[in-house]
Length: 154
Image 1 (cartoon, rainbow, N blue to C red):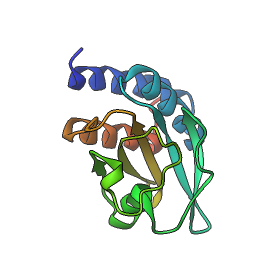
Image 2 (spheres, rainbow, N blue to C red; image 1 turned 180 degrees about the vertical axis):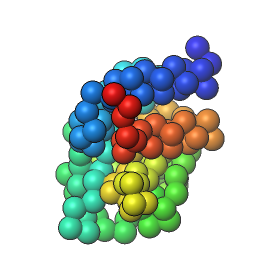
Image 3 (cartoon, one colour; image 1 turned 90 degrees about the vertical axis):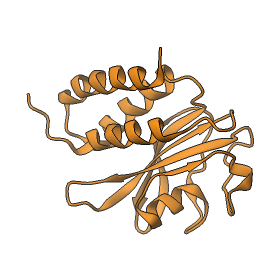
Image 4 (spheres, rainbow, N blue to C red; image 1 turned 30 degrees about the horizontal axis):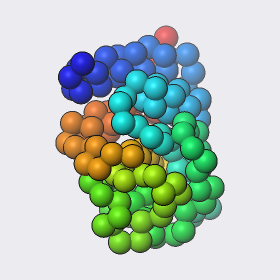
């Protein structure tokens, strides 16, 4: 299935699944699971959450994660500090990259904003493949991250 169509299908599925609860951690766990299991090339899929000015691991799927990320270092902190999505085709070329798993070769990080536009963390996805992520991933993953705080209809 074409990547754009796959994301569209996943987005619609998540909209329905996330109506069950407005609890952000439950929504993050569901998003991590669906993306990790339905998108090809996703090696590590999860969230790092802000807590007392630190980025700590949240719900995720994949190999063992770093529990805490060194402040202002790596791709996740770049996403927080720049308040924008960061696409890294080759993590080995990214200054200060934090290698929680040495098999990771590319990464995308999407800031997660609460209802008041405050960053509460990031959606972080790693791939064993180089150049795994592009603008299509960025657009759809930003929309998906936006579902964490959407007000459910039911």
